[in-house]
Image (cartoon, rainbow, N blue to C red; front, top):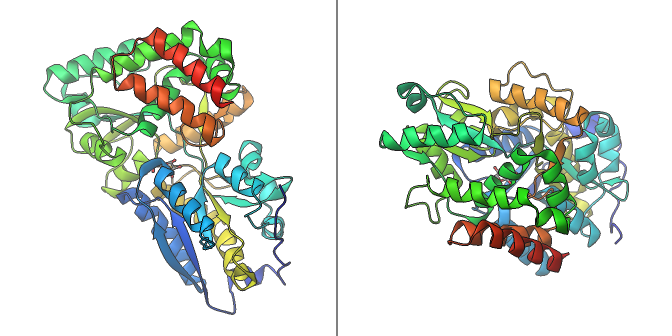
Length: 413
Ligand code: BGC
């Protein structure tokens, strides 16, 4: 339960900006797609410019499941990396096990408490201490549309599921793949949580954040599985095992009309030299206007010995600077975790996220993403994901799926 280590107080903040000694950090992360790699290179160059070397430990696999398995193996073998990318619930779990360092000094020197939204602080702090540096806020419930296909067929981006399926029919009739879907459980969970949120924010709150038995067995959850079944009908036969970024590429290349995916997909659009909102259209998933699911990528520092402290502090300070958060998030597709980064250089989709985040915070419809580690601890998250993927990949009825979901979540709780 206890943090095992408190970093020594740094002599002064200027030491963070211009370290006297060269050192290096080994960083474990899962940013391997084109857009993700472009974003990670921003951090790498920033650090190298400040005299801290970067040893890359990239573990491919969207959503980070494979990376977290590798991380567990490294720590179990007594060889943790200096720093690791993690989602919110994972930060809590590693802190709870006592493996993470304490970043309070750098957080105080850089004023994190004043600029990081409370919803993000709730994951970056453990027992009142900063244990991980938040670099962004992703929003997982978007629909991306091929502007070429939409304009050719005279379609508008859908704002209801009826409109979504009407557009999907037209796209399919015209010979394109209607819905570009990847074939991995986390991608199906990403779609399902968007569907639940679109049915109502209250359903998301009760069935997911509160994991309430009655809510999980409710008509709303049955309806969510009916919508999933309909979506499945518009997915092409080759989706099994497909990575999310290959599905995004189908939309970018004008082979598929739409993809339901988080705004890391926008990083692919940007890496392809295109403009989000122009060649690839964006809107939030049907019914989710006014609500906001988020997932934040954190860098947590492992206790790897005193000689790495300066490099770890440099990395945390770099990742939290206003300039870095602007440049990094322009490439990553997310919005900054800091609230004081100017929005003027961001595309229309990110600007919509910034405005919607303020609205959802005010109306109490801001929630952590279940599919991306901010809704439930890993074991309970897995119970949801297993049933969602089992339903999507079989002919299970919506009623049976809701009952199986409630049973699985209750057993995992
Ligand atoms: C992470 C993103 C990443 C995406 C796909 C999400 O869980 O937060 O940074 O781009 O997974 O790998």
